Image (cartoon, rainbow over all chains, first blue to last red; front, side, top):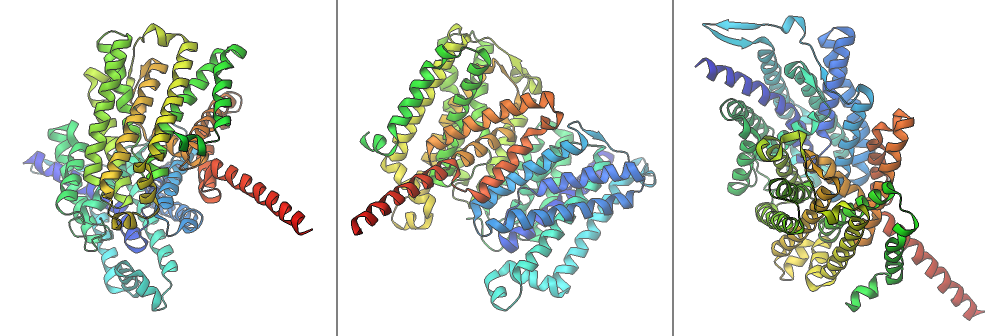
Length: 289
Length: 332
């Protein structure tokens, strides 16, 4: 029982971190069918800049804010100079965002060196709660709370605001929205910056969680996020949330019971979903084939 | 065959091959020979990627897996059995058979999906191979890798140089024949407009499978040569950097022209060699990969047809100028 609850908490918190990455990916894809291979680069930049600001200033909130700002800045540059010029050409988009990923993760090594960096936990989040012998690490609870709050905020944004309405309409039928006189490009920039901010935040939250950050981390988590986005259904926020939890929890249990199979398990999930329902669990657009 | 020599500037190709054949007599510096050998090996790898991206329009981000499969098959055979030409052949055949199997299964599962999904899936599967190589320590020795001895014929740098040169030439001719064949024409049609090709009655999935299996086989062959050239292997052969290398080489050299892939391999390997030499003097060049990354993006944005396209454009312009002059003369 104790193990079960611990694994569940681990899985949910990891899942919500992946969700932060996947949310941006899925919205960006849903709106403009751009698959951003450089998204993991924003994530790893968030992790490193967050860790760096935290060790310099010793303020975790400042670290998170700084990471988000840096992530958004990089996201803006990426959208403006990499994605806009190849707009509408899928093959070149894929190729150029992978190049962006290469530059982002290599530049990490220029600023912080090629070796992994240790990150400390902020003091007020250290330690753990105990209930009847069940130990739950405080920071994981913190990540779960933040993740759920962000999911709620995103849901509210999409469901109950003007801009959310436009985004949802854009995901459904971009041309129609454009024809109605809404600036879809501006909307896309907004969504892209939002996605970049979420990815950087995810990275900044992950850094103390895993205790160590390294440049290749971006690709690893990006692959997880891709798997989540496909399983959940491209363009569906709820789908991504659900799939993140599935992948996170399944990963935590697999890592405990059969550690060698954890990545293989995700791949298996992916293959099953692609074979049975290529549009993903909650995808509606039928855009996979 | 006629088509082959018609389209390729044959004299140039022959001149380059002749020059390369004579090169070891002119300059027998070990490091240059090793560099050139490396270029030949990566030229094969880049050509195999070009079949996918350039000729068929398939974006695969996991091409390193075939390179790695070929490299590991040869290395493991040499390590477990003894190193002679027979075991080399066995390793080669095993690597190629595995590559055929893997590329066929992946293709069957995912080639009907849109390009994004295929790119993602191949990336994920190649990472799976990386994990497999790291975890299966009993055979692969994990991330540390292992050294092994190679047949005497391959030990001599000069003879291995000729073997790789011959391999590039043979693979180039075979792949050129493949792309000029009727299958190759269908592939070209798929890259331009898949729906139209399908509407014309071609089973596009079938043709895309052929392309991906062909590319997998060639990549596996280059991987085997790579393992032999290093006499050492570790999990790096499955890393995303290997795929990026293939991408850089084909993009910079020019998509859809096998010769461009060879040129791209030469450019990238030369750059890598000299930039890492520069890094010893100026530490800023230690991160030379980022320079390649910027070069890649500049090429993608500015010269989408690469070096080959640039040269083609130049020669076209010249021809046009000559024509204009002739016309002007006629009028005068």
